[in-house]
Amino acid sequence: MGITKEYLAGLFDGEGSASLILTVSKQGRSLRPEITITQKTMWYLEVLSQGLRDLGLGHNLSSQRYRGVGRIMISGLKRSDRFIQVVGPYVILKKRQLDLLAGFIQKRLALPVCTPYDKADLDLRQQIRALRNSQGILRDLTSGSPPDHAGGDDKVQTAAANVGGRKPVR
Image (cartoon, rainbow, N blue to C red):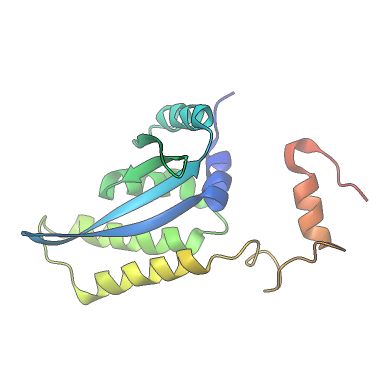
């Protein structure tokens, strides 16, 4: 059995990020959407890479160069848009990041190539960055407070225990 869209969504929620990368050159500024999933285990990234190919999702696989971490990068308007269409409906924690990125992509795809970026585009980049930097563990699934690891939140314990079909431990 291959990697499913739901599995990729969960992996993106836990190990992924969405960004608008700003590049400045002699030709001016450029914003490029980028979706990244990072892992330390290279063989696992290769399995994910094959799963992405099986789902028709274009990407690049980078080796463990920076801090021993490898990356799968989905970059550009069309590739990022495809990831959002295929995997986005199953994303939970980082849904807002993908929604903002999707809005940017749709806007840019509707414009002629080389249309200058406006202030709203640059502001959107900052909004996505702020979401990425403030993402808290399970914050959106709990009532705004982190789970109590000593006693534990029943919903969080049940969800965590049910991973892989295991029953909750009481």
